[in-house]
Amino acid sequence: MKVLVINAGSSSLKYQFFESETGEVLAKGSAERIGLDDSSIVHTRCGEEKVSIDVDLPDHKEAMEQVLGMLTSEKYGVIHSMMEIDAVGHRVVHGGEKFSSAALITPSVKAAIRMCIPLAPLHNPPNLTGIDACEAAMPGVPQVAVFDTAFHQTMKPRAYMYALPYELYDEYRIRRYGFHGTSHRFVAERAAEMLGRPFEEVRIVTCHLGNGSSIAAVKNGKCIDTSMGLTPLAGVCMGTRCGDIDPAIVTFLMEKEGLDMKGINNVLNKKSGVLGVSGVSSDFRDLEDASGHGNDRARLAIDMFGYQCKKYIGAYAAAMGGIDAVVFTAGIGENNWAVRRDIVSGLDFLGVRMNEDKNKGLRGVETDLSADGSTAKILLIPTNEELAIARATEQIVSSAGGEG
Ligand code: ADP
Image 1: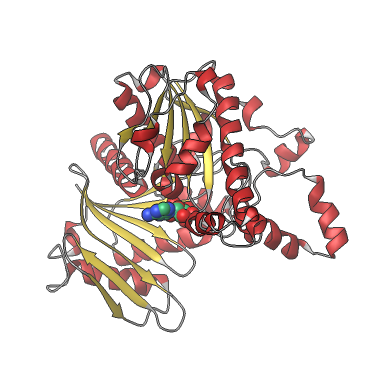
Image 2 (image 1 turned 60 degrees about the vertical axis):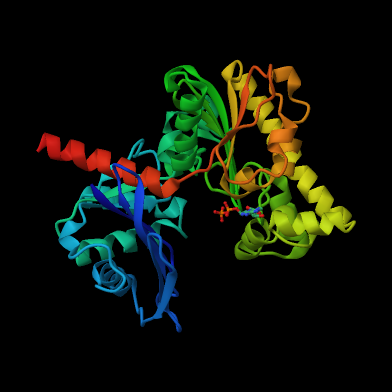
């Protein structure tokens, strides 16, 4: 099945076009600066050089049409007509409590995504715009929503409830949702394969560590806990986000610094994390450079990140009654060997022991990093959210076709 995967942001629209059975990427790219000056489409046909074409993109609908134009063009395309697109899979950030799996998009599914806008005001509106643009440009082609929150919907109330007045949950659905679910699920399933055991029988801690980082406890094929919360601000400290802090700091800072809601949100989301602590950068490559040149605050930021991740692994091993694997994925998890080493150091008591020679310098290659005799495996597994979306889309469309 040929599946187009769409990740629509407020001014961009990223796409990957898959042959979903084989996982082959036929073409990929993004429409950039939609609705702004100097908009363009950056497009790569499998195995060829990237091309960048300046084109006016007043809105997402026009961007979608231009993307379809690229996919079907003689010069850059991979199909003759858009009739060859069997389905479209959309990344949707927030599915609230309504979606525990991907869903075929219908008017009622769109309404449910719209209902979740208060929970993800920056993400769900452009996701919906992307869906509308595809519906307009490709009428009749099945569209599927794949939610970042869906995999975490198996958490029990004791894991997802906050100790706030229960009425606030009733009124606003304030609870832990968790994010990066498509990635956590993808790498956890692969980890079970690498362990040679059924997904339904293993206890895995998945560490998705990128600009945004989250950690999940996956027991017997289900997510039982995760570090992000109502929003992606919670959990371990991140590039620019603070992660878990004492909630009283929020009102303290608002008073002391005279910040309004926008101001405090800006501090917690954009000025904190390893950028805020180091004063150097949100990027771990810059932090390591600076630390190597004796910058103590950069060193502190790296240490804080590793320590916080380590604590989540311990907590989740306790929550699952043991641990069979720790998985590292995403930009930092896949590429930063020193951070991986620091996170698992001292976890021998859990049976987590690393082969440091194998780990050192390793980037982006699926590898078992555990030492001989380690009862839990340490696995580097590159994530592929787009492929996971393509596969989920294929599954939904095939089963809907079967029912019809
Ligand atoms: P996002 O959450 O935006 O998708 P990424 O998963 O790309 O973020 O992660 C960004 C982080 O990953 C940065 O801190 C960066 O230092 C690290 N990173 C990404 N690629 C590499 C690389 N090739 N080598 C070392 N670090 C990398």
